[in-house]
Length: 294
Image (tube, rainbow, N blue to C red):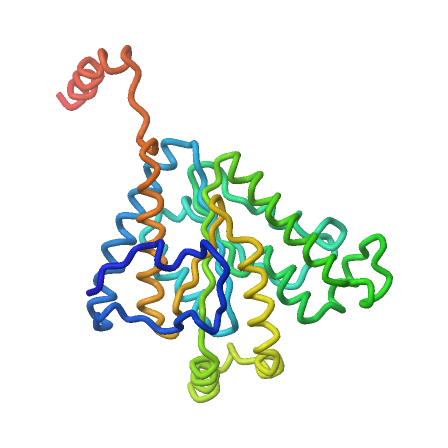
């Protein structure tokens, strides 16, 4: 299969989504991709064990994409070999009454992973500059001072939110959170096919909502908002990666590979060494345990 580098998908300058591919297979069959993912995710699971012992960094994985982009199945497959205590997944839905009593970043901040753990945001704090931008009337539920009507929600408002998000990510990065932001770049035609499968397969019917078609009609609006959000917030400490998502198996391998490649740049992530006094007494501890069997 083709070799790939994380930098090939990292956003380091201005991008246009229409110029970014939505399909990649790395010249590998489904069987080959599945086998490759199995190896990478085991390595990631082992690395997380080391990170837990090291207890200096946490990892935040942010997944965004249009409906049917494959976020749920990606989480299931990429993190399958993790210790269940080492990864926590949060799926952010419509804000609750309690969440609306706080600023829009509050519910994301309290869900951040502890040092040594991976946190996965399935839909993220970026919903606050995506869904709410396509549907600005949703902002009114936040009861923000100075916002009396939708007419008050202008370009300055969104640019302020981009700055706030950048500040939020800068703060957590400075305090030991390694941030990955993946945009699962799906084609409109592939979404159509996946929605049809939801309707045609009885076991998939529960995933379908008439609202999916309503949001699909706003495809171009969402693409525009994603493009501006990515261009405004891809930073060296919190980069965006645009992942071709039409091939689910390849997308999973891609995300796992990027995580593995980038985390291995942190050469200080090592299991802690035992203190000299403890090392000196290891033989005596072994002897005590061996005597118990006699």
